[in-house]
Image (cartoon, rainbow, N blue to C red; front, side, top):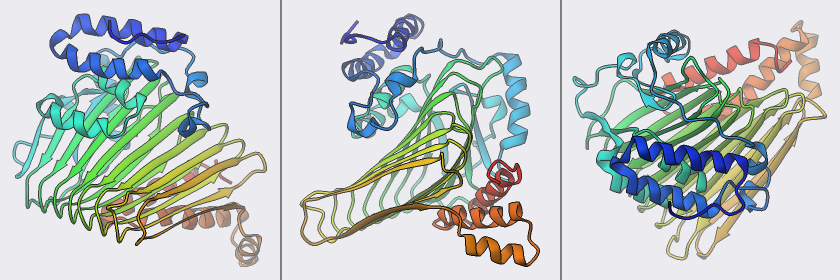
Length: 431
């Protein structure tokens, strides 16, 4: 069966049992799945003893693993179709998954979209494995062992898409299952596109998703993640490779996170690659969101900017861990990382740990982190001009959080995230 799990928890035993059942059902790619599961088994579920998981002890949080989700039946399709109407972005080309399974009946027809090819992820298994292995993460390995195929979205060299592509991840009618999904987006040399990832899977269970982004030379991508509702325990992984002159602007709006780990592993592999990362996490109640990223500048003269915002109410907990790595060959690196937290309650908390690992001597790198409360003078000014306190507070929060979306060049994506943020504030959860 491969590498054994050492002193396995109940959840790890559950995964082992489900993996054996999966191999019986899908023996065709057993070797690749077995290799991924063996890597996971050697590491196990990460605990607070693992430095990068110190503030999000998954070994303690995930006590049991639910059975694997099954392919959607007609009931789940009907349920997901109704949910799709509520959450889908207007005007985007849609690719829909239900519990990690591609749902062609709910997706748009890409056969007439020039320069875009959609195919099963297995068709690029070698590229996928190389990109995924550079992250060296047990939850990404677990995803590789269990994900039911997945998709490759390939945009040909020189193509400039007019409409955004939207990946919509929904859950089925049963809920409470373990869901795995994987998508690889490949942009050829000089290609330009916008990508939306809408995650609305708030139906219990465990979620482990992976998005792999490969940008060729001088390719440009605007990427917006709308993490609206997540599983009870959810891990979202994004692995990125940028070739020479490529530019990625990636942001996210995180909400409805019972226990969420969103992790990004980015490699600037080519000279003068440019990276802009950001996110706004809106947490309330006892929600927990962990944003962890590692940006590695492998080539000279690359630029990276990271700006992360947290708005925390009641007993919510935010975690930010960011690391910029600059090896000796990456001279002329320009990297800056900032984390800002807005605490709306004395019981809310933010753990921030920005890091730099620099082994080159001709660089300009820096980081910073700060948290505080709403400015009392600004609130008083707005109230003195007749604006009710809840509305004044919402205006200030919107201005604080929406700055994370300014990195996007695609105005339609910015408008979409700003509308989502405004709707979230109108619920009164952050008043």
